[in-house]
Image 1 (cartoon, rainbow, N blue to C red):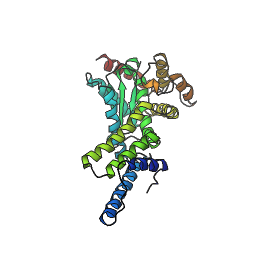
Image 2: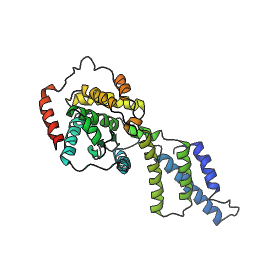
Image 3: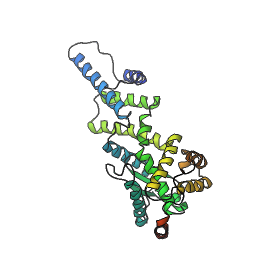
Image 4: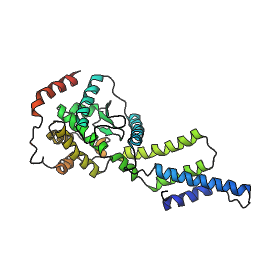
Length: 301
């Protein structure tokens, strides 16, 4: 059993003082108190395990359902774009080309790309394989290779398990206090099973909101860029398209979207560095004409 953090125990003590009065009797009351304290201990154990996931301990199923919760939060903030199903299908074909040639070609329920109906320049990924790209970001992409670079970057976040790593490190005092309060309420046995489940879901939602607000760390962004370039090479796309896209983003910074959590594109370009000497620019030149035709056709609709 995982050891309960001391700060969590102390926080719980203060919460518990408000909901449980000392019992000085024996017999039935002692047994009821023992049962209550066991429920408290069990609640803490479950909460600590639920909100301190180790990326290595999460299964593909865990990541999928966590991803669904993250996707729901994204769709609270942005509407899905459904006016052009052909464009969505086109992006999913690009994603398939990238993932099928990647180190992790399959997930519990696969990868899927959805378009967000906003002019903001943004993109998001969930551990369950959901990838969201805004209309604003699609609009500035000059080529299929640039769209592939966006998708490859998000696929890299998924395959590097960055969301799980963030949640594993989400251990603020405020979160622990909320967990303790909920554990005390659950231990009071005054809630139905449905209400208890809702409390756990509320705690998960709070952690997801923190993730959605704070985004990835700088190191995670740099790692995703480096892996994205390798994914592009594996799928016969031009790896130089990633740097080209970053230069475009550097000209179009907008407050309040992905740029508030990402390192600046210029910093990402410096971290990315030049292509390795054995990789020539213009990789995928043999199919360039076909990619241009597909791109023009998809965006013309």
